[in-house]
Image 1 (cartoon, rainbow, N blue to C red):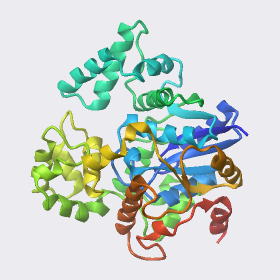
Image 2 (tube, rainbow, N blue to C red):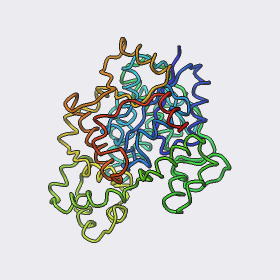
Image 3 (cartoon, rainbow, N blue to C red):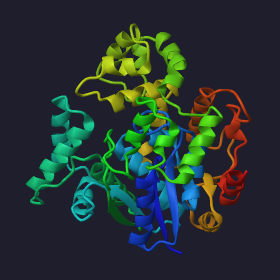
Image 4 (tube, rainbow, N blue to C red):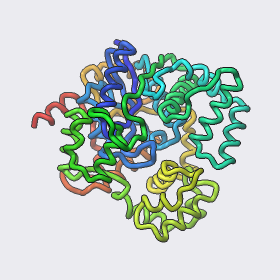
Length: 416
């Protein structure tokens, strides 16, 4: 049984994701699919539209065989650590044969030599990166420029590294190099909608960004997503929204975040992950007059400190992720465990196989004390749940009693 691994957020799972899933299996000849999926907080530093359990259900209904949660410190990190965390889980499970990612270029060959070079962070590249940052460029732009200049100087010519999925794909390859992984790599060209595209220009394919904009800014009814997401995704979204569990945004976390910010000093704020170079003063000044999380970000934003980076800073505050806590995790060594969110019958077989091959623990049931990073996941998910209405059968302590979803349980729920 050949298995392909995908790194996803599914916020929400849409037709482009379905294409990626189907094309990845075809391109790699895979019989099974494992995904590593961000939990309730995402790489842009924002809460997920619906919970990780709802998105895991979307994935299982799509046909995914095994859903693994990407720990919060990786899921909300820069592209480099986000990629390393996800790829390291796949590699250490011992059952994933290939990693397949979407990219704007649809070509992996230019990435391979660049990844081999950048995996060791050569001094000339590091210096070019520092130069870009000193000019006030945001990290992704400085990184792309430094990598492009380095490869041109090394005789590789121009490389298309200035697009988000290309950069992320490159980081997947860098992670494979650093891990010395046996897994193969493949890429699928992104179709019809760019990563950040907010407008819808196709009858069937739209970016997750555009779909969230429809819901939050355009106040469109959920039914307007029907053309752009699988029916199973729409069913899950309807189920979640009807129960009051979504859509989730920063608005739901306004009060706890403002409380934390208003009870700390700039020096205390500077102790949180990613807060640096005096940005704490701009944030604290913004808090005094802002009425929403979005207004804090808009007031504090600079050329160097982008919207997404500021979101990640504020998320660190919300989840109490200080610099000292994050340093203790030694994130560059890779993920230390795999938390299972769901599996199909074939996924059950993969889990049995992984128990004999995995070099990290596999957790299907959780409790405090299994690993300090897992403790952060549990608390972060409780914070997310606490921001939802306290109705129905989902208390904010549900993380302690939740068990992985199965294809059978998902099918039974959909039939009721």
